[in-house]
Image (cartoon, rainbow, N blue to C red; front, side, top):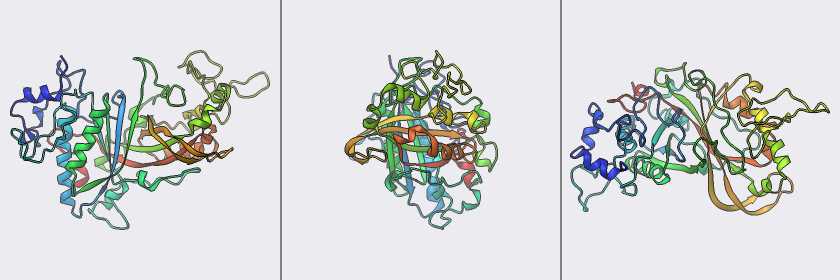
Length: 413
């Protein structure tokens, strides 16, 4: 019998929003309990969930603009969000206003579309954007001095075509779940709870599909995610900087449109040279198995590199980036079609797929990881003739949350 929000609510009995108030949050069903072990991920811990958590099949990424004038309003919202997130990730609904039994005349804080759905391993990962510290030259919340040195502004990279309405944000929340409706439902509830304090700026849904134990394929037909970060403690978690970021990580999100029509006109051999891997097996060029080491020094009989110098896997590899590594947590996206003018010959214009990759990565310091890595990639990666970055942002995700605390609490201490 699956454990759903409806059954959890019935089992919880009188457990209401007040029972999840700071200091009473232990009443949330634990993800380690036998009945829920396969359905929910722990919300509390040293690090935020949704970073090293085994990747779920769907995401709903949201960026918010803060509208609150007072610091106290922002704190109150973060407290509310924390309590709500603990409930949602445990498979519980957000309660009706005022708690207690349902009253159709009241404004219901839970919109109900996830009723009877399981927790689906939902995680909610929170981040702070640059506007939390200073926006338009104003230190709105008295936090300017607490912006970490590593939290620099992302530069404009070669080829960027950033859309204002899909870029930036003061807060980020990445919902990941094994059910797309559960992920959407969670963001919808947080947006409702933020009314008057924050408003949605942009959102992006994403998905990844694979048989159990297999590496998912992206929309270009290649396996995506074969290489993983080797040492999370060193490459993912922020060890330096202010206390509120200890155990946290810096998130970079990039919405990357892939010119699938252009890609589909290329033969498979050219596609494999562009990526540096075989399309079907995922093995590096010149090798047999997906997880074989990249033969970056190997050459053919004419002295040419087996993996081209501008192939994606070579340009992105840690060995060609001073050892820098990032934790990739990307998802494919498909937003239908839109009018596009391609940025590479033959410069076709017309209705094309608005689809590609929601690239999400985490790192201990973007100054030594994503920024220099992608600066080089944006200039020489063969994949650039098919990929255009159209949105995204960078966010500082604080360390994990203990029961009785709220997300980012040390930032306001």
